[in-house]
Image 1 (cartoon, rainbow, N blue to C red):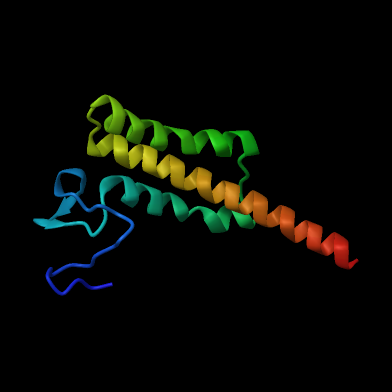
Image 2: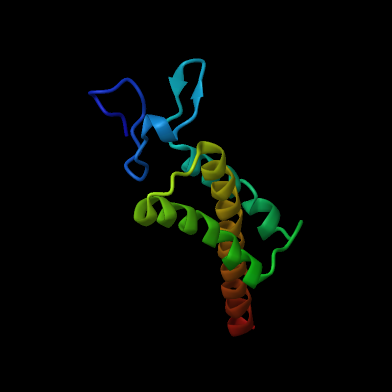
Length: 117
């Protein structure tokens, strides 16, 4: 969605705080460092679905935890993170999330195939 009051894209799911965002050639990224990492992590989805590599269920769940832990430490204990940590935990979380989605999707697909055969 384009916000008429600003000259850049506005994503309602991201706070877009300048101090938590990357800049390129003086322009702020449209999403924060953590969301940038998460979205880059999402790019592994086709490799997971087509079996190029697999991540075990437990590891997939564990990969999502660092992002929530980093966010909670900032929010509740006033421990400041930095953009590098936000980005890295975001990438790990994005990969873990897509692994979970692929595991669940493949499981549901197999159940459907079992049911119709």
